[in-house]
Length: 496
Ligand code: SIN
Image 1 (cartoon, rainbow, N blue to C red):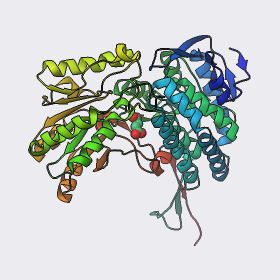
Image 2 (image 1 turned 45 degrees about the vertical axis):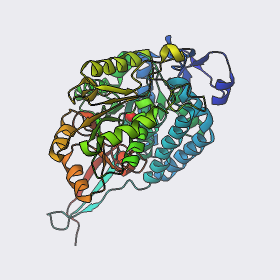
Image 3 (image 1 turned 90 degrees about the vertical axis):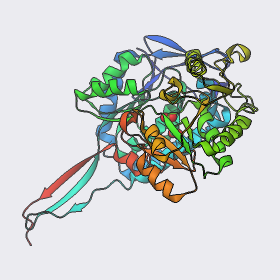
Image 4 (image 1 turned 90 degrees about the horizontal axis):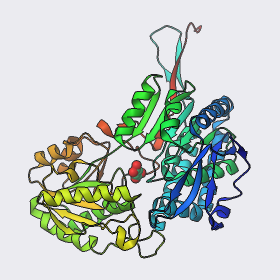
């Protein structure tokens, strides 16, 4: 492996119209791989970058660097850590346009959404910087005369993070900012679709003064890098956002070393619209939740459960909105939806829609691939009505721009259907009846519930799920606590 002295700047990379070449970021150095892989733009299939794969050896080096850096970073005053994080935050906002371009190029979301993601992601850094100064213990009563007890919170150590392609910027900052604030060091393995956003964040972290070895990014084959992170004694925690299947695998691997895991996994969000709801607001909420990032978020509305009294009106309001949505290149100003992440995703979503059609559901609008028409991984914004809640499209996480409506009358049946899934990440309820709010929010098994609100994530609030949707919380004070160990100290025999 060669150590490279680059890159000059993110803007240089973007202005260079030739293929971007990139390396991993280990111990503050740019490191080439032993082989490479390509990154392509899903809007047109063009290869935009070639990135070195550092494999297991690169991952081992990164863990060693992170373990060395931990010895000093954990002792840096939280006030100083906060200052460095705030500098990182400022640099990210200064480079918002470039970072957003990278996101749109790598995974296709619209440039407008990408700019929003950069601000969303930076918010976790700002919050964590402020929270760094509030990581503290407590004094405790003890049963022993003249003794004193207290707790301290200390950073857990080196954290291995495996991050997804759907929010290639914000899912890194949501994990790394609280970890760095707490005094941990990181090895990040970004999704192979979106390494450039991770590397750009590393470049800005370096410029902000994050010491070498504190923030490492290793690119390459997950099958080789993942087991190094889960298997190393030096790594004390694994953070992951992605599928439940991979989350379970990581959890099994991490079990041998009894490592802490923080897992943000799949979802199957019910979007419940009760007959007293404001239908126009509910329809707007469904569009915001369902079609954000072309439906490729873990918290996207997956099943719209409507009471029959208002279902026709809701379907009509949705049809009007969905048929106006325009899919297209994320850089085009009039695009409401970008492409899916790759062609396999288009085929997977199309198969779900076909199965629904065969099962007798009505395709109100959309329901077709747009890849040939638009020359990229596009799928038409789709509305399905009248389906059976046992259809594949209702039981699986769609991860695409497909909304499907199910009509259920009784509140207890709505609760039963909402809970009839192994997942429990986000749910949404639209009603104006406060008693229904209490019964439904307490009856459904989800980690986050938006009541008359279609977006649940924020820097200040706990993000995470129950059941097979994950373990742990990101965001707010909980996000920082996740990266700390609680230590109890008992001081005996203090003279009175
Ligand atoms: C996700 O899809 O994993 C994150 C969505 C969000 O933060 O809103």
